[in-house]
Length: 520
Image 1 (cartoon, rainbow, N blue to C red):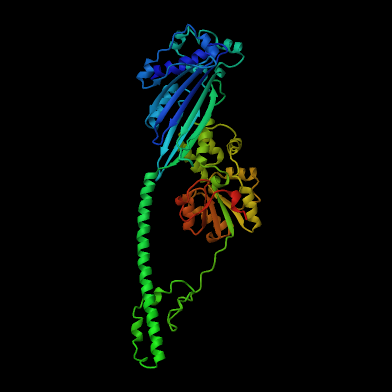
Image 2: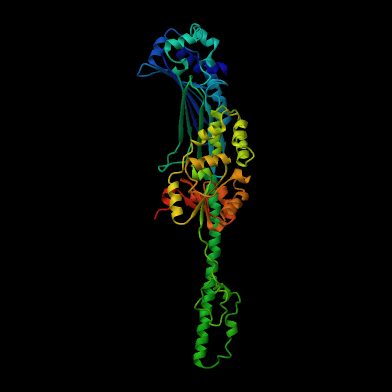
């Protein structure tokens, strides 16, 4: 494996380093398919000056790349006089992808700390490509005796410091490193896949690593179709039962009308009325209740002396809306996953903890068990805690249209509250930064309560602090599990989702945009 990576990437990079004033650009493109497999394409481009100065250097032997499963393309001369070399290798799953990326740059190279995670909840496939693109190791990380021999003793056949002085710039700045990631997405309006494409760039003179995070979500139609078919069968059965009930009800109603007409005819005839089998006409005891199913409504065909006490029962009192509740950073600040944001930031600051461990520390801080300073310390991130908070939360932005919505809601007499997870210091910083103290009150934060959503403790804390009961509240949140818990407690619920499907959230209202919510 080590020779395979030296043959393609390191040799060409080293060539660019020693060819004064020349440039090399390395692009690693990862294309992931719907099953979590795909291909890794490596492209190295030398500029025209570099090509001219490499004359006399032996062509690199690439047989070992082919033996390792790579497909190597013939060199391509570019119109500008440069040269392009490319190789590609497939991978079957996320584990193989990690191995291929380590082949490209070695276990400590710039592309080695990247990986793909695939999760498949019911009906969906969720993908997360994350890590860091790290050029901070510099040119020294590419030193190799075989490379030096192939280049007449270079790159370390001369003083690198003197070479940088001659160039007037760090040697690594002449080697560009790019990463392109393509994750599959749901089909667009024209049926073509709406792939998620993201690009990151750095070079071998970078001051710090570049955090990488790209996510996508797809619907898997087969389980949804099976579930839909099952639901359709249930609906058909219910319809058949309803049709049968309606037919039976109509028959009984017709019999009742016929009996009533017969009684009138006998009464008009003036004879035999006392002997008429009136008691046998309405023999079905359940018929009277069957036609009296709508409160405060009496069927005009029901006998005048029928008991209508159940029909006259008073309707329940209406419930008024007194308070709108904004649920968490996903709704208020458009942060799809606060843990993802923390992981990317912490790793860019030098944290080496794995994703699950960072997530656990975040939950502890969200429950109030860790202060902000303790959180950063346990993540292995050095610096002033307040400054770290400000730098990370500086990436947040108020959801478009939210401020106007809050102002309009308050003008119409509604209170506006916030309930969400996170450290208390983060919530305080966001309130100050976005000037929400006078608009949104109260703020109920998990760290102050000691529990995270969808725990009942947060909803109970909201009720006690605000003094507003759940039936008089509308909770707006982007997480269905939180909405389900709130609905069980009696809250009105609305799912904030710019692109979600109503079928995913039965029983919840759908909010696409705050800008349009209060129109009219």
